[in-house]
Length: 94
Image (tube, rainbow, N blue to C red):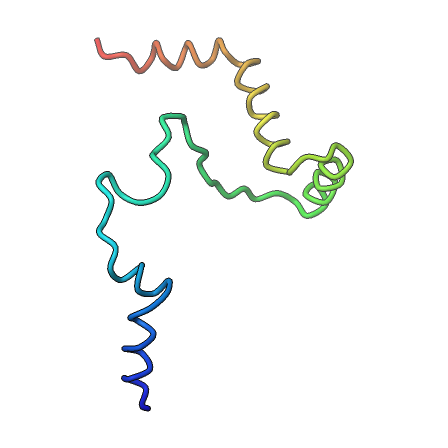
């Protein structure tokens, strides 16, 4: 029995057969797309000593560094709401 014979036999049974002979479901595969805002990945350059300190704080608080940074950025945005308003005024179409 050669490789081609084994593959033909494998393709005719079990999970492989169900995958090969399944018609696509209308609307696509997997979970439906979410309407909520998704996170964006970014890169930050920080001093190694700062990163180590933040990593330790995150460990003690049982949170990820990403969660800590997101919280700090949200606080910063709230504290600088006036600057955001000024920015919006500057960039409005006349």
